[in-house]
Length: 157
Image (cartoon, rainbow, N blue to C red; front, side, top):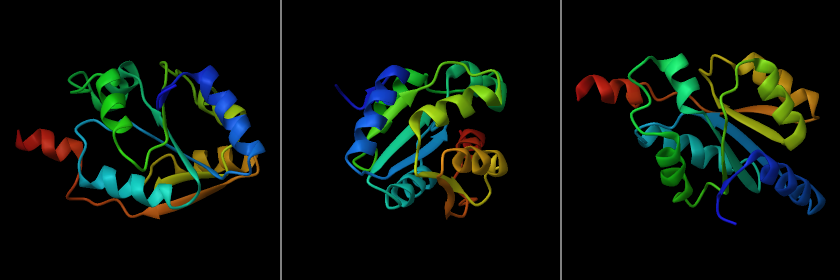
């Protein structure tokens, strides 16, 4: 099995990791046009535990969040790039999640010890609730680095 996994595989992996006493760190995002901010975020998140799992948003959800011209790179390609990073242990390519409850259900199945976010994450309160619901905690690992964003890169192109 490679780094890019299904929901079913992620549940089995998380159970095994918990049995081994490993600390699971969960992050979520789009990760389109990888830049320094992404790398610094993933490195900081990885330092919070033993295993870093990235929840990678679907193309449909990305369009809903970022607009009709996004993502620039398809989910399969974004997952491939993330799989090459040494700090990332697993990438879970999410299906289209319509509701917050879909994410909450997945968090309950994975039982992460840490949900890592940036200080400017707009969903921080919601993610904190998810973390607490499984006995985990939310950790703000870095401030958002304003000069590094996919949207800013897109504007310059």
